[in-house]
Length: 499
Image 1 (cartoon, helix red, strand yellow):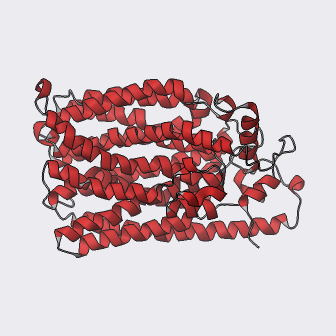
Image 2 (cartoon, one colour; image 1 turned 30 degrees about the vertical axis):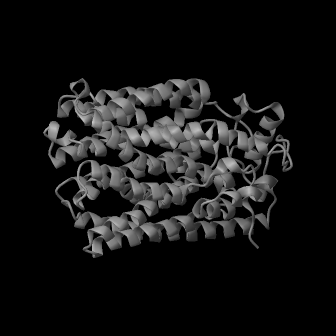
Image 3 (cartoon, helix red, strand yellow; image 1 turned 90 degrees about the horizontal axis):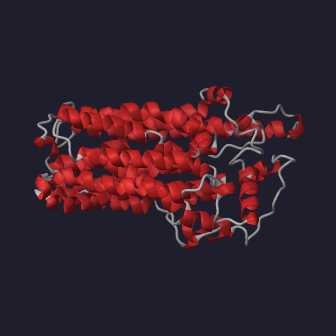
């Protein structure tokens, strides 16, 4: 007999936590959070991805030529971003709660907005490298921090639709950046600056201003949210504890180096780390090089910017589940996109990743196997959608299956460290001399193999978690919750892993 993780987690709530029954009226609190927290988080990630990947649009607009950069130097500029980005991810996640996400996240956003703007005034390759280094340092904690932040606001079974909502802005930024760049480069010569410089200046200034506004709009936690009344706060906090999204009390979720170490011993963390790496290569390879790939297919200059938009627009639609229109699972079918709905409704993160991997596999196989440039361009719709649709499920799977807080923060950071390590490989795979344009043959073969390996390792993780859930069910049949050793976190027999 299958077990509902929500019910199991409910059964394990502490005696100190007052259990609150499902209340349709108080469930509207999630709608408030969707309207007042989620859009800010989504904008954070859109600007993060836009400011990190707009280098691809600037390259097509003349950056590489004006700064006299080789293809290898362009790849180095991308790599320089990833090194501090990776270094910052784990420490940032570990101190996020102590400093306060309402202070730390806006500070990072404001600083990288300044740095993005400064890229528009660089006169040399070395100046660009300096900007890219500090951009990575300031942005490193953003994505893992946002995932961790949302995991403190939503129950486990409601989380992927929200992560999909904000991660889908990465696809939106891929589409939006092309349109935006097309318009901005028309400013070529204004202020005696090239069009590519204005891409950085205008996008960076907007990021800076939004970062300042976030100091006043981003709440620290449900307990301090001014838009929730007393009853709504109590209900949300109780539901989070009952469903295992947060600890049963504050003591459980306090920082512990032991819990940092425990995260490194979880098999599911390392299965996911490998998958994160593969998907990181896919996502960042396409994010940074789609304009160049499209250009290699015969769409040049401004047209390359415009024709890079549709694949990302489709990926955005393919990820998006409009969470702000439903306060409870019963209302989900009103507005839905299949992957996020199925994943949250049935708790099947792994199967969504497998489906996404199949889409990416087909896309890369078609690009590799056909000669028609129109069909090659069409294959990008599959490869971009598959690569991007897997990421929200991966993030949610990681956050769902590690507890308490410090262990989860570490597990999420490990995943993103691997993702951005994949980004480093992507910059050399498509940006160096290993796989030259316009066909990118060796790179496409590698991306195809990684798509298949994503499917294989996801299957391994599903099998492992299924076996662990069966062992836990057997333990629950023989002992009571009170007789179990405390402090086990996700290893508790009463914590059912999400598949």
